[in-house]
Each structure stands twice: as structure tokens, then as C-alpha cells.
Length: 415
Image 1 (cartoon, one colour):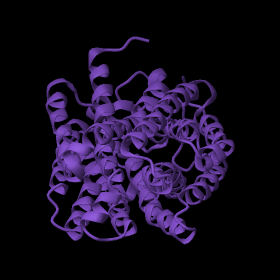
Image 2: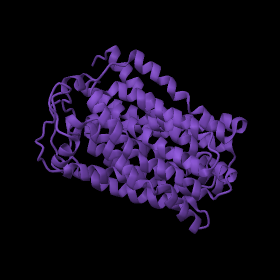
Image 3: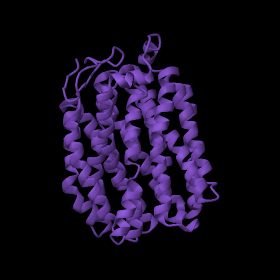
């Protein structure tokens, strides 16, 4: 398998785009306590900003996805990256909680566009046999962004404060220069751009069963991810009373596990199929929950977090390639991102829900996270068995299955 220079640049740019998008998102989860203190409000009220960020991501997936399907993946990616970086910077100037919440909602729109556009550009460009590994790599950008945010929190927070954390978030804007200079347009999009294509709604009506199934699946996946990550720093700081440096290194260990899981399961999916890789990773989370949520030492919690994120991001590592392979070709920049972010919308209550459960149980964040993680792990393992299997499909030529093929009828693509 030979890679061209253009394929390497596309993969690098998409990985960095999702990494820095996640970096900007996760900077906030470390400073919920500080924002609450600054604006004299409960942490649960500040957590609403996270909820709205997640809730607005479908809007971004729709807007930027349609732009990418109509005008190309490359220019849309550049506009998208610039938008989320500028909104991150402006968040640091918020004079009150209401302004911050509005800016985080707008940030959610920008954040919602990057994943679908970047994954479509990459999956349409890289060699077919490399998709599993590249899928894991792209999804590893999410925990990589979390890792970078934890490092910034551990190293700079005491010097720059919570507003300075947002100011650091302007850095992704520099990626636009790299994309403009080195990243080519998707060859599959160039080919499809000359062909007549149905409207978004016509395409979704034709594939409505697949769309509904994918939204339900991605709702469970987003509860899996955000339910094990978003309040973990708060869990460490509030329930265990750890200082910033301890929280930072535990989070670093957590995200190393996530990167390992994504790369391993993404690569494994080339051998055993997308569905079975996701099935195994999801169930691996169950025996890890006691160590992850109920350890009493930083070392025990770090070990549990490492293993939990191998499971969570291992399952997630297959999602970029799986959603792109089952997507209608003419909607590939829109469909995966839209169903992913609609799942995010339905799961956007997670932060406030978990904070509320924890408060009702004497600030027991461990209990709240364990309930969510255990439930959705079982749900994902069950749901994924009904998915289609289109491993290795020719993305430029279109789907190998007829549009009327029911969900749950696996079809192996030619390899």
C-alpha cells in the first residue's frame, strides 16, 4: 500500500482539525468550577454552556456539510476552523455567564461542522485498505485534543487563569494556512461534482430508516463519550479534592488510553469488520467501571480511566470509517456529520443530567458516571449488531447496496 504526499497531507490536516476542535472544546471542562466562582453561580448552571455547545452541533453539521457537498471539502474546512478558533478567543472576553453561554452555543455550530467535513475529505482520499487505521487516527484526534487541553491546564492555568485558557484557543487558526498550502480537494468530490445529485431532503427520505438508526446509534455513542469525559475533571477536583497538576496527569493518562484504543480498534476493524470491533470495545467497558469510578487513589483512578477510554474511544475509532462507508455518496459530507451531531443533540443533556444526579447523591460524580457508562455500553453492543457492513466500499463509485436494503442486512463490499 503506497501513500501519496497529498494523501498524507489530507490525513494530517483532518486529524489536526479534529484535534484542535476538541482542544478548544475541552479547555472549558477544566474550568467549570472557576467560571462558577467568577460569576457567582452553581457549577450546574455553567454546565449549561456545555449542553448548548453539544446541542448546536447539528446545526453546524448541516450548514458546513451542505457547503462541503456543494462547494468542496477543502474551502469549507478552512472556513470552519477559522470560525471555531475565533469564537473560542471571544469566549475569554465574556463579561457575564449569559454572554459566555451564547458564545459557547455559537462555538457549538462551528465545532459541529469539522468532523463530517474532515472525515469525508479523508475517507474519500486515502487508500481503501488504510481506512480502518485512518479512522482510528482521526477519532484519536478527539482525545488528543483533550490531552492537549489537560497539558495546557496543568502547565498554564495557574499563570493565565480561566480567561487565558480561552485565549490559547485561537491557536487552531494557524491550521488554515497549512490546509490552504498543502491540502488538495477530494478526488471523489471532484468526480461527483459534475453529476446531478438529489437534494438533502430527497436523499434523507430515500434513506430514512438508515438515518433514524444512525441517529439512535450516535446518541448512545455520544452518551458513551461525554458521559465518561466531560465531568471527569470535575469529579477529580470536587469529589476527590485533587489539585490542578494531579487532575492534569490523570487526564493525560486517560487520553493516552483513548488514543491507543482508537488506533487499535480502527486497525482491527479491517480484519474483523466494523461491527464486531465496536461490539467488543463497548463490552470491554463493563468490567472496568469499578476501577474507573470507585478507586480512592489517583493511581487507581488513572488506571481505570486509561482502560475505560481504551473501550470508549476504541469503539469510537471505528465510527468515522463506518459512517462514511454506509453514507449515501452524494451526501457524504452531510450525512455522517449530521447523524453524529443529532446524536450529540439528544445526548447534550448529559452534563447537566450527570451533575444533577451527582448533586442528588451527595456530590457523588462517580455514581453518576458509572450509571451512564454501564447503560450505554450495553446499548451500543446491542445496536451495532443491526448495522450494515460496507467495509472497503468504493467511495467514488458509490454504494454496493441498493438504496432499499434494510438496516441489519450486512453486505461485504468488494475489497
